[in-house]
Image 1 (spheres, rainbow, N blue to C red):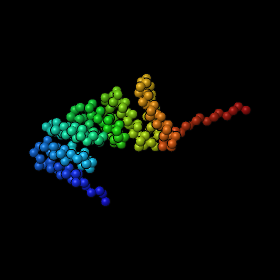
Image 2 (image 1 turned 45 degrees about the horizontal axis):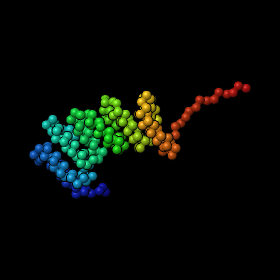
Image 3 (image 1 turned 135 degrees about the horizontal axis):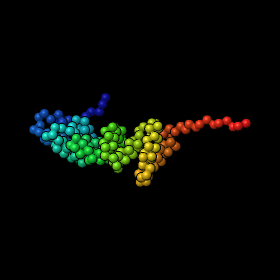
Image 4 (image 1 turned 180 degrees about the horizontal axis):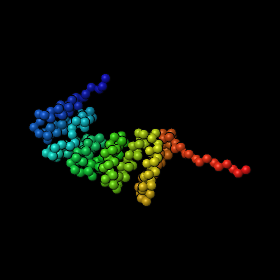
Length: 204
């Protein structure tokens, strides 16, 4: 049996389900924010799942303000992701990317979950945000999919090559390289298979 819904989560659910009777979108969102005041994790998860991050033009400002306020009060990485979605929907992809990056650097699971969306956004921005994303995604693979050794090593080599003329970024990449070697030493990351060419027979 699943866990019973907490009293706080019930209050949040009731506020969410009252949308059709609320005087306005702003009033509806204010009621949800009030129901979340105690920071109950189950209630916040309901909000993340049920409250939209984009809306018709008339409600865009109210939706954005709601997510900004909620993420500021309850500073969980997964709420930062929802705020990032709202910022992107409102037309500010750079702020959205900064939020995505801070969330994924705090939670490697989010980096894997949001990889497709963030990769395209980071590619379009480039520069330091792109590099931060590349490092965060490689670190996430080391956290959760270390047995995908081909991708890990190939990606690390690609990044070393791509940033070979940027010493400061190489230094940050070497930290991941040290981690890869440490994981190989403990068996967390399978050792690379080295294929050697056949020896030529000695001349008699």
